[in-house]
Image (cartoon, rainbow, N blue to C red; front, top):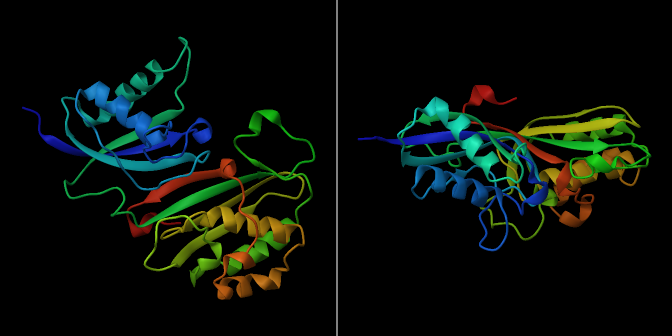
Length: 264
């Protein structure tokens, strides 16, 4: 008889054709697609507990989700078997699935992928080039006007630490007990006229927080907002004081942390 296991999956996905992570009855979602694949494969209903409800068009390099089930399959073989099943749902003999299981690990039965999360890391990709690359349109934010990357770096560092990030929260998300969050690290890399990445890790993020941070930094890179205004934007606790919301397709959930030492 198989014993019930609590499995933690590490997942990469291309969010371009999905309406976000969270299951919806009438739209394709990452959670819905993966749950139906797992349920069909293991011949029992599988419900995933995900760490992040990414929006439509957002991608993941290392999302996490857990589920409990009795499985007659060694844990280390789960990625191969599930990935084969995911590819089998695609059209054509050489098709690659937009979702891939990178790792599977057996966890204690009281572990929960969402509630035991200690922090997350996001990466936002900007293509600061004059010409548009049609093939990358779903994977980067194309900004054709030159950005002052040094100004963006200077402004980003002001966000590091514990603050009330209400100015960087969109309306429409789930109500929060507090809008205070801690950013462990934030880094802007790249050069004006090239590929730019904004990497930010923290103990949690408000609705659209990383996209609004990105939009604010882009506005500062264009000189629309002065670098010295960043602290005033934080203190205002007013969404209208921050910059625009960057589009979803440049955003990637990069890592999810479960131990303090993992955070970086």
